[in-house]
Length: 181
Image 1 (cartoon, rainbow, N blue to C red):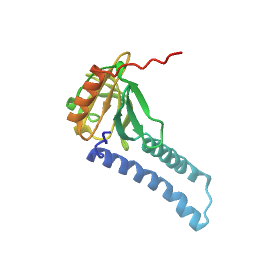
Image 2 (image 1 turned 135 degrees about the vertical axis):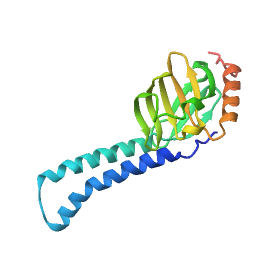
Image 3 (image 1 turned 120 degrees about the vertical axis):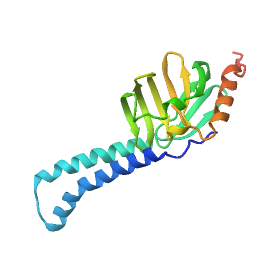
Image 4 (image 1 turned 30 degrees about the horizontal axis):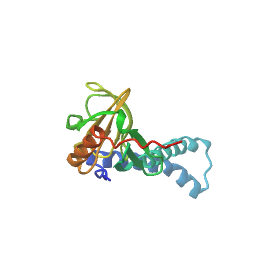
């Protein structure tokens, strides 16, 4: 089992900033409620705050908690969402992805979640095309290339050991057990 690296400074700042913005948007409704003032227009910032809270909750739910290399799968467990299972036979390579350390500041065309509780979801990068991030820290990125699917970008704490173990497992899979029927 490989734990992800704690959130990097950029992700902490983005997460804190978005949470702070959501809190600020609720303040007018809070003041109006305490003063007895009723104005339907106060629902607009509250609706934005609710949308921000929902996105924060979903980003937290999808944050990776550990990366496991099992007999036939790479398993990426997440906080509340179901685990992502990638068959080892689908993996074509694994390597450091330190060249992506500037994401999301540079070279980004599209990103689902560039920094809130980590980096999650599909990204479209200028130099590297489509990738799928399930990472928490840009300084410890590992790329896992797959057949017929975007590469996974992960951030295990012991990334050199992760690369060695995953590469060994994908090159030497255990024999298939056949049941007699």
